[in-house]
Image 1 (cartoon, one colour):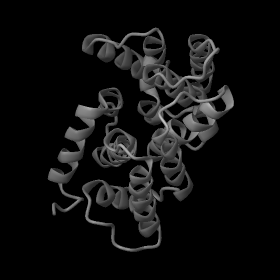
Image 2: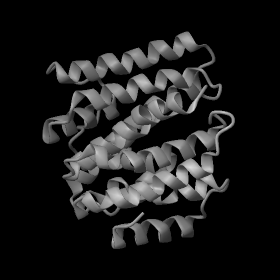
Image 3: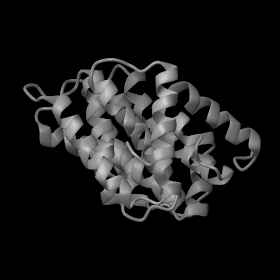
Length: 238
């Protein structure tokens, strides 16, 4: 197994995130410090592994078993045990040690993904937002914390905008809601909240600048993605 602190291990996870999560990956290119960037990428790789569970199982019970495995593996890290032999867990253990990561948002990331095993739309706005808080909000807060942000609450609108747009893309948005209007409102709130972020932490939220594009029913081209994210980071504005 590759040493998780080695450049090769970092490169492997970086390549994974670049392939499966290009928006977050591109935003992470604006993190100047290599160790911070590797720790954020480790969080994004964990997010992919958790989200991927529901995509690879046919029976919900199998998915529950796999998510429980991830939950127990994270518990082991915080119990001071050696990480299980998985590159994402090894990188996560390194990030947890270096950054003093909080356990609760990592647990929230896992718990949210149990809802993915039921692929039907969410019943109402409240349940959708609660899911987004765990699946998108906890991840954004962790990444921003690695980059020096202290106020996780200021990040919630950006995470909500991103997560609600994601539910639209997956066909899991609650029926009867004007989701585009909800996403637009959250982006507006996120622009105000982003002013409280240190400049160094902005790459952790910059990809939310693409939320309105996705909520409009289309995916950005690679050029548009790069231009929007570059402008967001340089201007500090979503």
